Length: 268
Image (cartoon, rainbow, N blue to C red; front, side, top):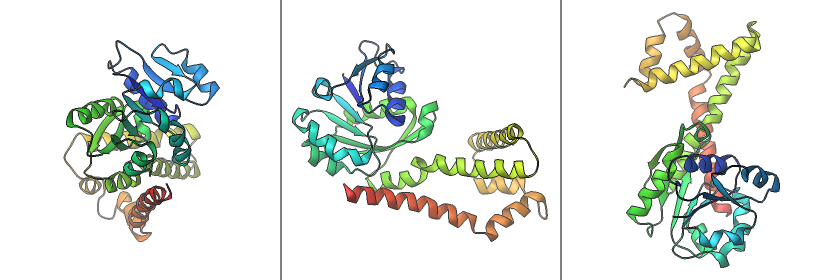
């Protein structure tokens, strides 16, 4: 099996590293292509990769092609490689908003797996939702899932609408967490804590809360009830959030990301 990753930006390089170090490529190296001479120069120093600077030298020999380029570059890129692709190749898209049908039509191929990754894949804690075209076999899909799982976990969804919905939850979700963390750190500094202490307070609070949630079957609501007591400090904070409709604002933010993913698909 020959696997090519097109694009060595954040997501492309993350999945390349996960797959290259997973043991799947003990007999041959993972192929990777990028237009940046600076990036390819650095990658050539890594023995795990066969690095390509010309797409025509690698696209046609790959069995599986991971596409990790910006969505607005897709149409032009697909036009450039269409004469080089094979009908039996499987294309795995890491691009937000680009529909399976669009990829099939612009490349003239049929086997496509569309995914929605997220940034924690960089530390092996990613979650990737994925769905496939009808021409991808069960055996091929299992292979793709195993490759996706090298960066964390994956979930299969029934259709593409859930890929767009995943964008609003898991794809963009880490930014929501960072937003909340930044807000808490700024509050801590306003209270007089140093930058270092503010970071430690917030970081360990998040890590601890996630660990508690992961190791039990309790819901977030149940955990909030355990932390908060009537008339206490935690309840005062939760009441403030409810009074300011924070829950609704967070849900609106998730839907804004979902709606933008749908719009990106229509723009292709």
